[in-house]
Length: 128
Image (cartoon, rainbow, N blue to C red):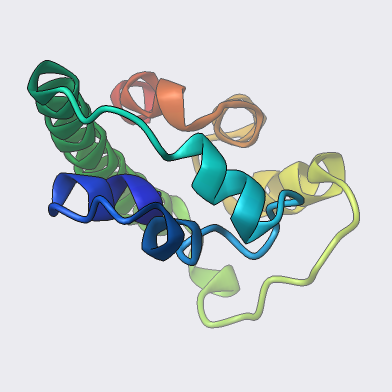
């Protein structure tokens, strides 16, 4: 993502861009720099800028949904469970069991929350 943002910000030096590669990337800086050489067409750069704006907007919305979900879940927490640390379990099923015991919403709500991904957060908020 750092490389894409640098390109949008105007960086065109392939070696400088390659230095921004993610540390988990298996390709060397030289290989990446070679792939980043070429033509910088304005229409492609425009599309990249628009794509990054959409990505950032979606990430912001996901963050807003996650905050809302956490607020709803906090309201569902029972009085006797407030302030207790949540133990770490190996599986989501055990975690769902723990939350079921402490939630007013029942097992159906918690199982749905644990099973869904970020793309489903809108539906989760509407169900909670």
